[in-house]
Length: 390
Ligand code: SAH
Image 1: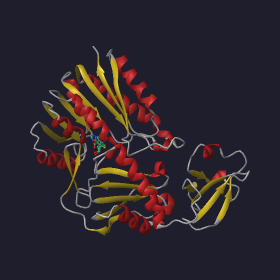
Image 2: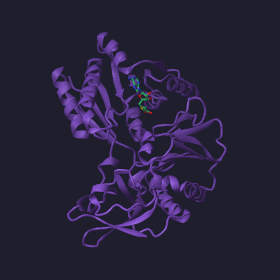
Image 3: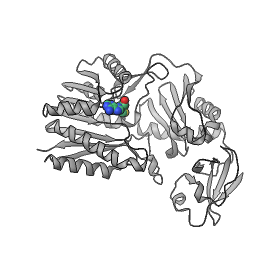
Image 4: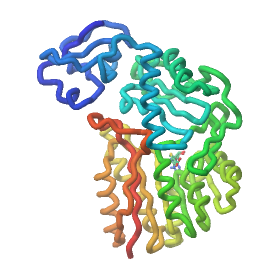
């Protein structure tokens, strides 16, 4: 195995546990093929373990968090078993969960979601892509009752490592329908069909918080996707729930989920959430709970200002449409906008409208999306729950 040496005084981030070795931090850049296993050592000879090399990506090595001699089915099965034990301990009884959250599970570039009897895998980097068969075999070892393994390799980041985009079945047959249960709410998934709806597993704990506040309330779920928050609120006894999303296929799936759960107190509509909020705000404060869970507003640093303006506008519109004593659930999955920045936006917008906000709950990504302390990239979701004290 080739050993690569870091330049002098370039190893603070690796000492702190970061798993991406940037090209500029290396003394030499050998012409090895993508996915070669290499060892990385400090200028003083301390080993940061081995990882997958890439000859052109800005991330030259993705460390595996240990001195791994060879990457085999057993290697993956061992990591999957450890990951499963943590999920089962922290989220008992949940059959839909993220098994592998990339770097946080020391498998940079790999995401694995388990939806009951189906595993959905994403390989975002060449090292993982090269080991597709080992990954499939290891999943079958650790989950003997799996009926299908689906690859969803459609994320554009793959292109940074020269990988093509593709999706499809790698093993077995996907059962239809495929229903999962999330704390008593049934969600139907269409992983391969026309709609291709997955599910946002990261909000599952925050949905239970919203459910616990929803009884007897009028609830507006903006950016509802297939209905996650709305369905939980309706099931918990909200008087009326409206879910809004700009995707027609997500709304069709949400409507189907409402029927599956026999919920007559929830309706869904295709709309731009900004427009919907603007109109509802003009009609005055009439919602008891408003949930905002927009897609990421910034993928690169140069867009942070625009993201901040987007969050400010969204939260301002929601605050205008909230009853006194109402509840605002303000989420952000933009990794580059930390919780302190989101709190600051809420503070400014509430002050501008002379409304007093009290922070009741600070949610984050569910426990199946753990955070690697030395890698801020693994922490992305904020879900702040306020009530309006005025
Ligand atoms: N709250 C959801 C997840 C939201 S993901 C859950 O609990 O599962 C973000 C959603 O925002 C996607 O479904 C996307 O279709 C939708 N979206 C993106 N831009 C939008 C817009 N301008 N108005 C409404 N929905 C939008």
